[in-house]
Image (cartoon, rainbow, N blue to C red; front, side):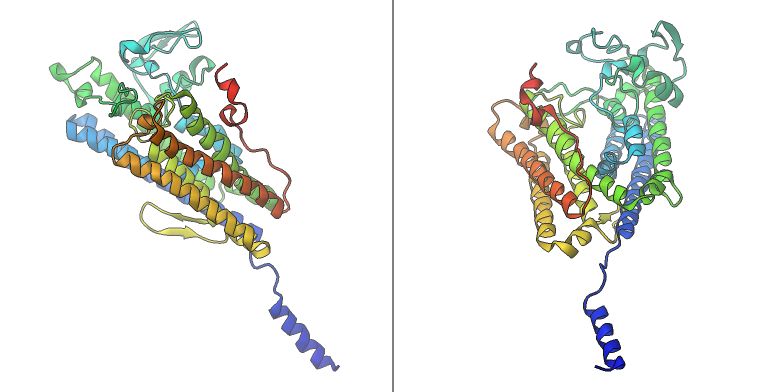
Length: 420
């Protein structure tokens, strides 16, 4: 065989058996690009909420309250898709409690129904009602809350006395201020706060309308500033992006940890299975607005688009690029197909919950003891999320990564403990 023949054979082999087409770094960069887009969209929609709130409190009306509520629901769509970044990215997990903590003792913020009760051994501030009290005692010291500001909410009130239920900031504090308590139990209907809770003069209902408006504005302004900070962490040069790119395998671990922990312990367990076990309408993520069906759906979508490496932005454009799916498909196309099918099955189950709720069968109604239809719908989502987690575990092995510990939940791992 001549030298020229050897060279042409080598050239043929180089074309016929190329190196792996997908670089791990490119997958992580796309993951970061999608995170950046999600937090930018969350910021954009939060600013729209901020505008709607400002217009409403400037001229309170039923229409203005409706518009603010609609803006809140729209703001949840991109944010919920970002929750998959919480697990595996410490910078997100350390921050998340400011913007999406739940459940909350809403009596800390404003008036509540008599059935709510008062201070308890677990939380002496459960009925503090900051809106009605310009001064109060906290940890033995008097607090001047004459001016309700973002700093008062974030630095003094949020998780006061180290109690997680003292949620003073974020989406759910705003949700409570827009809807009020949902007092319907398992019956139809969400919170029904009247716009007159923000009216001026003699039209004001339940007192302190000006301070209630101040709290709503402060909480919304704080949400915007918190999202501005997080969007910056994922921009070019941001700390969250840089951390991922320091070690590509650790970056892949972060991606899979987010997918597995959100799927299993957080969503299937704490957000869905636990509520079904307790049959408690308060055990739903967006309990004041009856928007839980959307939160579950978009959490699930966040897991799916992390694997597929694509995200549809609020303006309709798509961010996409090299993905975990591409990496897996190069060495094990059957496993990739299995993962895609399980994600699609879960999204179909979550979609059924969403469709049923939009048709009038709210999530808190599904949680009622003995409601077979509701239980079937919720368990469909729970089972899909658990099943896809088993395949996510196989992805870890396929990609040659160390075993991961996903978030768990007593509702799945030790059900008897739920009732102890």
